[in-house]
Length: 115
Length: 110
Image (tube, rainbow over all chains, first blue to last red; front, side, top):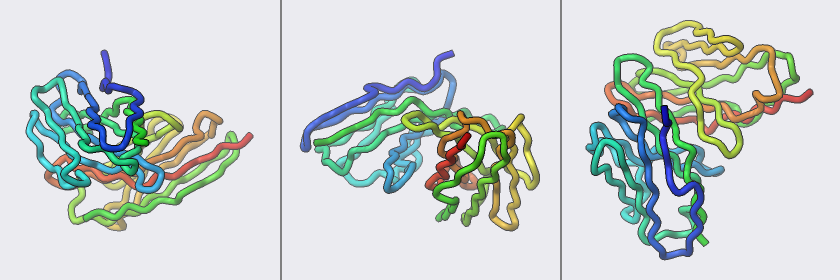
């Protein structure tokens, strides 16, 4: 059974360019989360979706960041324009709200470097 | 809001026992999670507590006291591969919003 899939695994771009990160959640999961991790700030929740609907985007740093989930099997996080301070590892995670632990399963992450 | 505190770094010896503490303040509580994260990898789920008490899973155990806003992760019979960061995370009541602590970097020495 495939876990959460993210692409690309590594992205190097120049300041001002648009960056699109992609995520495929675990099939059947109804929650999808985008996180950002840096040494300085740790793991931060950016936005999460329930049944493809954004529930809380209060963690999105600014208007340069946007996220979409057009269907249950795909989500994107876009940064436009990118800045050097956006350099981080971006994780996507998914979970199933079944009244149990509702554990979040993380993808391998996308390591973004903005020059 | 949520404040989650855990030590930044710990060191222990192979074969020993180590306890990693986590304290939290939250306006609503709906479960506490521990994740393990090896350098350059994604966090992986270790344990979950929603009621007070101890949950044991092999060499790992996790304890929760909701009244004290306190949890610990206990690792027994430490192995070199246990060297990693351990993240404490608190889920907010009535939604699936989960906030992570900064993590504790554990180094296991021979």
